[in-house]
Length: 258
Image 1 (spheres, one colour):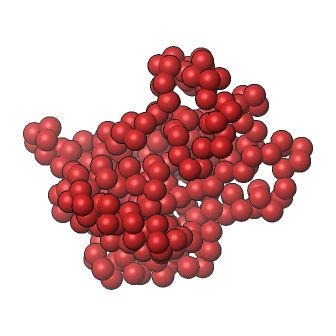
Image 2 (image 1 turned 135 degrees about the vertical axis):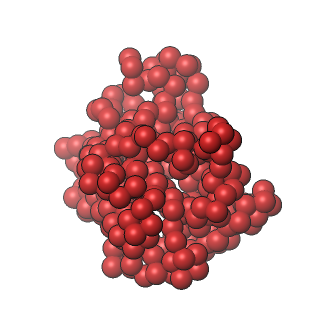
């Protein structure tokens, strides 16, 4: 098989949660450019409509589904709707998530519950539904969990104090490895991308104050941009990754090595 064919996603159906903006939309662009038809999900219809129109202008076959993955009882119906439309789901990118900034000693429990429910439980339930109902029967699937370098180490409190975010992203990395262990025999590969600091709506307020400090801690002396997750997402979604599973790959300019 040629290298181009290994990365070709023609005929594949990809679902990207939190796909209406930021990192999720960038990943949707990449998968669509490589030939996949893309379903994006998010909570807000207007943002989804704008994102779908943007993808269409790029030549991507895109559909939008309103969903709130924090409401776990609605996830099966979301999968119903996508399977009714596409017949299968080959690639699932679990990107939807939230962050809460507060010192650990003062972190509100309701915020802890919110992040566990969305970042971790929602990711598990959607993965479970998609794998059981589409990928395992087809004996082919790719699940990409967007974790964080905060799921690989503790965060310097001079940069951020995000105990619930770190805990849930560590959970996502552990979930990735266990699902990979259990589902590999079915042809379903599960990996995690662990971004460092990428400018986005979720990180914008923090970056205004810690930009210089983060750059000093990053060997590449740059932040992630709108193209830096695209290559790894295509790799992990494609046939080129067929011997890669259970991995948590940092995309952070080398910050984790310091």
